[in-house]
Amino acid sequence: MSLFDKKPAAGKQDAAEAANAVTVSPSGYDLRPISDSLKQTRAEGLTAEERRVLLEHGTERAFCGHFNDNKKDGVYACRLCGLPLFRSTAKFDSGTGWPSFFEPFDASHVRNISDYSYGMIRTEIRCRRCDGHLGHVFNDGPKPSGQRYCLNSVSMAFFDNGQPIPQHVDAA
Image (cartoon, rainbow, N blue to C red; front, side):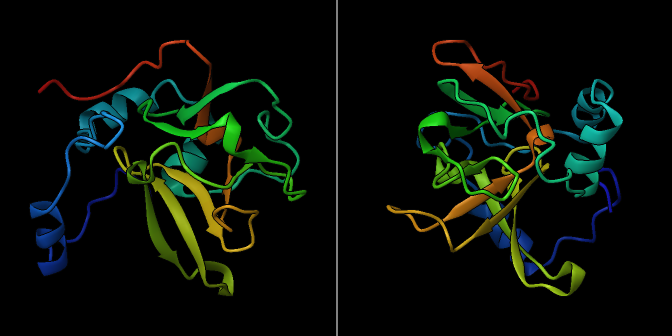
């Protein structure tokens, strides 16, 4: 299922979630979901692989991602909407072949979704603003969190420290 597929009718849980939705994160970023038309416009600039991973919940091959060995100081943001996701200071070498982080830029910027695909029980992580697929989080990371956020490089864009991160949101 892609981000553009029709979503089921909102249930009680969805209505309660929407009523309690936070629109600005503690770090000051707009968390309102972007419109389908903005998603489609932004998706036009993605490569086929970026669309497959971000929009169709795919996974890039291990040790192939361009950020796996990135050692620069900066921020990793969502490739589709620009929401900051992880800082380079939280990145570590997990040996898995995917960029790994022990904590997000702001916990409210990622959503955790139960994932039962491929006969496994895992926790998928998605961008809070655009719902793009980022990767998975596991409970085998280093201290202080014990978490390993395992990301697809094609789901992210990197910005050097001090470089502005363009935000792709609908007009208020």
